[in-house]
Image (cartoon, rainbow, N blue to C red):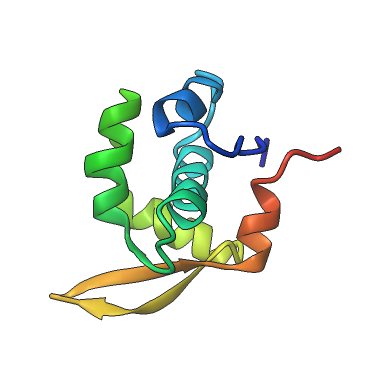
Amino acid sequence: MSSQLLPQGSTWEEVASTIPQSATDTERLMVAVRYRFEHDQADTTDIGVIVNDYFRRARWPRPTNLAATANHCASKGWLSEAGRVEGRKIWRITRKGYEATKLQA
């Protein structure tokens, strides 16, 4: 995964503007999950919140199949299921997912 270092103190819109247009839905999702974890201090997240808020604010297109995108991230070991709320999966970023979104020095 191509990765970005998330600058401290940056707004989501500033971070999102650094992501290349060619980024995949998976890359965008992981950057948004990491931003939410670091800046909003959200230990777990509903992927629907990420898409409805973060993708909208970044003006990114909604992934065609959000569940498949999240499950793909889980199969890579980047996200783990942390439970369910109202029938929706709640996800937690893993250390591997966190490291995968860091800038490689």
